[in-house]
Image (tube, rainbow, N blue to C red):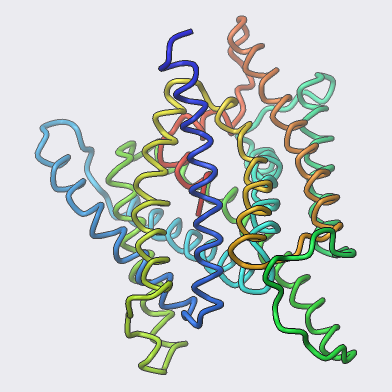
Length: 359
């Protein structure tokens, strides 16, 4: 096996997961340092829009390469941008209340939620007697149960952080507040995973009418910038939160827009082209391991037993769903050509892969 199909995609996917996880850690550090989450989302979207701005200008100059952008398509893109902004806010607020480990664990729910929504929207044909459909059903249920475990059961700490946070008085109200914040953060991160799956369904419909991926990325990011700007202007009244300084907040914005956005998306798309969707998806559970290590080192976060147990259960369900998808792909390739899963077509689209690995 040559490098293009062997070690390079392997190292590339390790880098993709590491960048995604480190972006969560940097974001958490910025919010802990006082960076406002609403303005951070706005500045990140604005910078991404500027980076993507040349795409529609270049593509539109090529004759026949760009179908007309109708009002109907723009309306759908606006709706997708609204869902994308809701994903971002759920991620940032959920991360503020919990931890990167919990955030990365919940990302493994995306295949399960996508499977459920694909059945509801009739984009997925299911044969309940086949082993692949049964595996996806069991994997979906297992992943959701794991999400409840990691959210509702925190458990005792396993490793003490090298730089523990200041000791707080063990008042009952304080302990209840910390526990409720953890639960709220967990449910927000579950909502993020569900919204990303909903985003997949919407993108699949839009790409049938407007299959220009880079243009779609620009317009959706531009609409997200406008929406996040309006949200920030309404919710953030203090001028100091709008002033960018050379600190971890600025680093987080640059890292989120450039490294986690442009670089990670491009590398992930290249790996997808070389290896296929199943291979790319198999690396997602590594994010839990990376998040635990980076959070332990840079954030001084303790690793709890509930997070480990819940993450293991979620990963088991994740691999159950992915095994079912792999079996479906094998059956499709062998001759029937019927019942190709939505997730397979989603991952073969660069824009959907970009959002799947991240948001």
